[in-house]
Image (cartoon, rainbow, N blue to C red; front, side, top):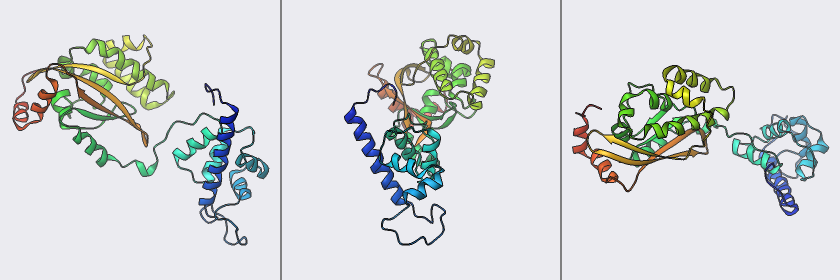
Length: 295
């Protein structure tokens, strides 16, 4: 594995784990599940034989035996993917196999069984009340948000529903943001980092084209080519009902949904922010929000 100096003891441990992992996964897969015909004699152990895994993966029987024994052999991503397919590995297991084989794991993928998590994620956002929270996809499109995100950040149905585009083009959000210029550089740098991780992705290219066409400020910052990993951003907001709000936005990833980013806003110990957010979420605050002051 690059960038890590592996000791001989660490290498032996990794190969031992590789052997035990492959044997355990092989035992889980029945011949019928692998598409093999019934019969073939009695089996001393459950699951597939090594020779069957080799044939189904399109590799030599000796090579697969050496792989399962943890020998020092050349391994390619294509062959590991073939073995992972035969052993019916999940995405997490497939990436684990790469690590045990000494290769950099591929990027996480969304498993079909994990795609429908909307109810649980909405419960998470609602539980974060009275503080703003929202979720965006890999292209910065809004997926869902809580009521505080509407009241505080101005998220609503008549905007583009893209966090990047709205940051630069929504006059309501911009009028509330006291440190917009400071944060704009980080927003663009983080978007460039996301784009660079997915070269050639048409979804990113579409958002990028729209942002360049909509905002000269975005284009200027984009051309500076800054790169920044997502983390925490301080936001100072001037709300029309309660005045200054100081929050910290934290971007979080859900491993089983690598295509989504959860953004939670936490009140800072300034400007009585927590109490103001609680008031905005109260019945009195909600009534006041029905008749907002312009801006």
